[in-house]
Length: 264
Image 1 (cartoon, rainbow, N blue to C red):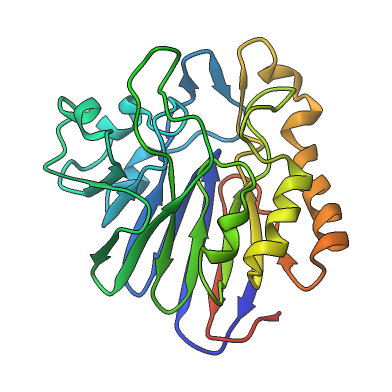
Image 2: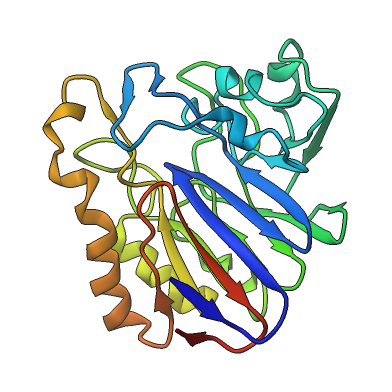
């Protein structure tokens, strides 16, 4: 599906889980890459990924330390010359991965990648990698070029979302996790719809759903893999009807163009 804005185009590919490929103004940014069929006790339920498709990347942005967002084996599959942007406190975990440019950020920092500006934002989430493990900041990112795109990472609803950015084109919002229940500083479909009332984007794309499930459940195709984005659509229609919601199955893409959102 294509949404025309009347100008430079931006391509968004929902790779799966919290991994999104953002292509804008000749810059390719990949969020929280999880490119394997297995990650600990999680199994991929969507189609497998060819990591070779993600070698020509200008920047990788990491939102926080959790293993389904900072996946070291996935990073090892990528070109180590790529700029790697991580929350403050995370760089030491990556010392042996092989990247040559690791840049730590905290909320409010900005980095230029070619013609795009990436600004880190606050996120309300658990900072430790696992119980009693390393701790680092949790952040989201606003990527600004011909469009302004907010990648929330993992976060719960927080009042400061009203200050994330003015005039957002697209919000990439987590609406679930990887299991049959969700709790503890995450957004469910209803809270993600509430976030739209604070962020006021033109378009929202739900992420963090439909991709990973615990071993033993993955083959069953349980409802938690497919239901969250549809619940989000319904909640958004009620709470933020002015926002266009586009549900992308894992592996699919859309293109946005220009400055006013017209669907075709």
